[in-house]
Image (cartoon, rainbow, N blue to C red; front, side, top):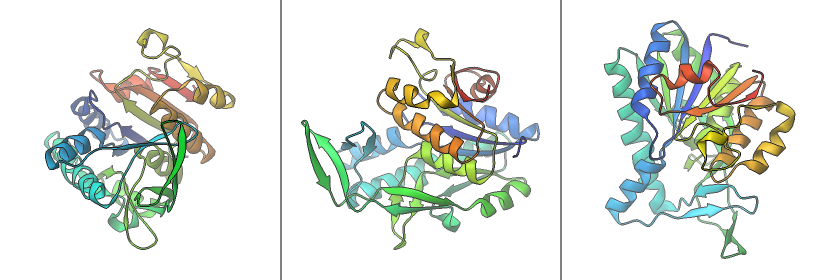
Length: 273
């Protein structure tokens, strides 16, 4: 396990303070930590879709997990937002802070591989239906050799949530679960997932109801408590810990030093404290 390495996922929703995240990542890198930063794209993709006149749709699985409906037209919007706008903006911001960041998507160097979901089951108006033109993927492999090569050379990888499918198709993948896979593949001890809430809330949206600790054997309880996109963060924590990650922290990006605050015990600590 690597104590020096830290994998961070910064959400892409409205209200996420990506500037604060970048400042903290740059400070950690300057202090000698090896950092891999993955990011979300939702707000930027929604804005770009609105400009292009492309409707945004969500798919809700029977288990309650929500994902972006990514047909061929929506895929082009998503790629432009994820690998273009957001990834390069974060990379440039880090470079401006003196952090030698390298912007990548999961397509580059076969960094993230996934299986396309040929048929997606969704619930609409209380009824289940099958969607077959969706370009989302189930993650299978992360190229840890490429990431180690970059980290050992002093670079900070910044990864957009796109993956490569078996037919070399680009696939939309969940950023939290991608971060879990990357953390496990690199044998990181800790994964920090930052969003626009303090962590898992017992009484959403009351931020005073923050759950401070979830032992590994209470993940089922946490998933039942979670609402909306927080369900996927709990699922990502489960997958990261199944891959050997000891601690997953769900924390708030809106603090002056959000990563360091999370590492100091802020947010919801899942697994080892």
